[in-house]
Image (tube, rainbow, N blue to C red):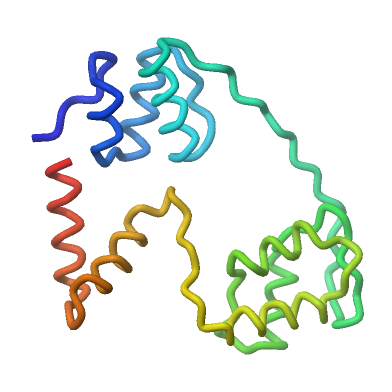
Length: 173
């Protein structure tokens, strides 16, 4: 049986259970903790609170984006502060086809590789797709991690079975 998310919950009980973002936010409000951030940040904040009784205020980062061009070419140099915009997505869809999506490698490249060209980004994207390596799924995407792990542990299983197991896991806590 899953315990209630109250200040009496132990750190171990908290860590062993699945919590919706809404539950985490409600807990933070009830304890006068900051409610900003994603599910992962909220969970870390609650863990800190449960282990020490206090929490450090989150550092607020103000995002600054440079002005993005509306049209792109392979030779174009990636600017500082660029982000994965709809116009940039359209350019890559023209280059790669409708199945293009900004994966983690491409998002990181656009964000961190100012001074390189869009052709460089395309080369990195192609290499990543052809590597065949299993990509790490970030901690906050618990459902996606469960589905992939379920298929690994139950070859031949259906998505319906994986979802049923997820719901049981979530309800059981």
